[in-house]
Image 1 (cartoon, helix red, strand yellow):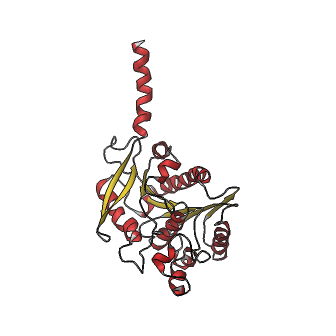
Image 2: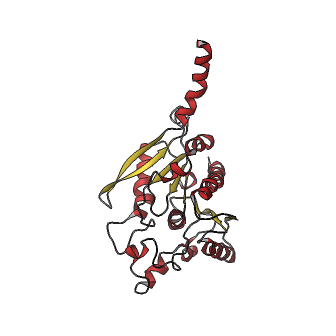
Image 3: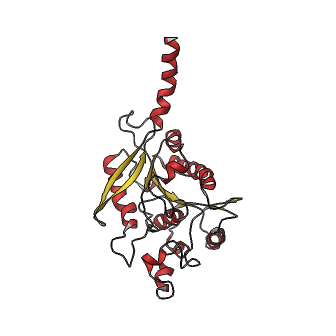
Length: 272
């Protein structure tokens, strides 16, 4: 019986280790406060001297927080181990991942694309290059994934969106956006400048890989379809997925599998 128990423990222990995810507070100098993040390390992290790992930054949606993704997809640690990547889930509050032109204390573009990146590269064994970084998210975080990826191609080599608010203009009274940009009627230029669908001219050929995913029953489906068609019109390579589904956790629990596979392939292709 003792031999059987020892064997069982040997089988179980690596799984428990692989499921560990830590909450790490990172100081944001631009906002003068600490921001919480879930950091998920692959099972073999630290076991191979000199080995570095690509990092996937996974953004939550409106009303969510740094812990949202691990609740939606508890298997993220196993996925990190399977694909040999670090996964980081930052807290973006309800910022839409902008540096707000109206509220100086809201600078989550600076935080995610600069301060958090610098912290991760300094404190973890990361592949500190665009070929080793990707960013994506759900809903507000889908907007954030594309917003940050397109605007920081020197930082991220790939980006994505799941059920993303990729064009904010049809929703002028929703999700606190006017808190950060002002009323649409009075600040139309700011809204035009802060919507993803108007950022496509900034994509440099061969610099950014992109994946977009949205359910056909989602209230963001029309804007995602429009983004896809605009990308096609400008001949910008991207992967586009639409399938039955609505704006909920069940859809994102499934969608994140496609995205992680996409980024794992990107990371593998860019590994020197």
